[in-house]
Length: 255
Image (cartoon, rainbow, N blue to C red; front, side, top):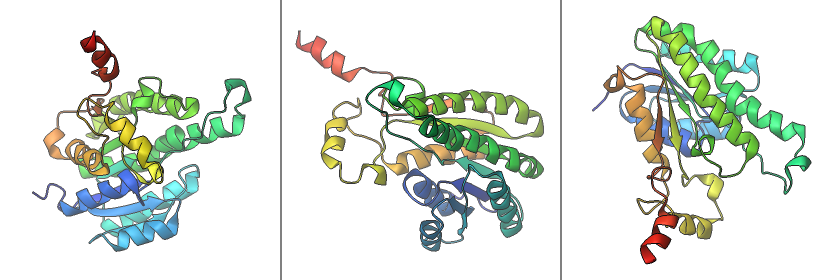
């Protein structure tokens, strides 16, 4: 099935992890993909391994860089049909909240939340012009429940609100805006912490953490015409984490 034949797609944070898996999935269904990432060398390496893909060095905290990436995608592909906002920043919490510096708070919000706004602002006119435009924001279960990382979690919660307001703004122009909230996903961020991942497997009702391809599959659905009557929604792709409290259920069942 090639649902994205002739589509132009821009993916931020596309060089690795969920972004890379999404680039591969959409390209496998016919899309021409621009892998945009602040790590320009890694973006080029990823794009070079995907048929029909190109790369662009892009820092989503820089409006000029964002607008240049969108302009390049339109020039390269002739149109822009899909924007995937995947770039984020997640700073570690300090032991005490009062010790957390303003800089890390601002960085997480600027990249994760405001970066998605910058990309949507630059892309919307082009998405509207195709008559099939879609934005898919990559959120997190952190935006719905406490798993630590104050700034990152606040940014992801804000992204869900931005998804809804953008959906209302873009709907009259035929552009759909949706969000995916992943649970724990086995990305390069977890490299060297395999033992911790193994612990987390048992917390998830479906018995494992997610793989990047799980999220990429959900992106492909929401970006495609299969989801033509879906906008403003947040889809949990979390192995049942927020629906089922496995740890408490196990204790109660043992009682």
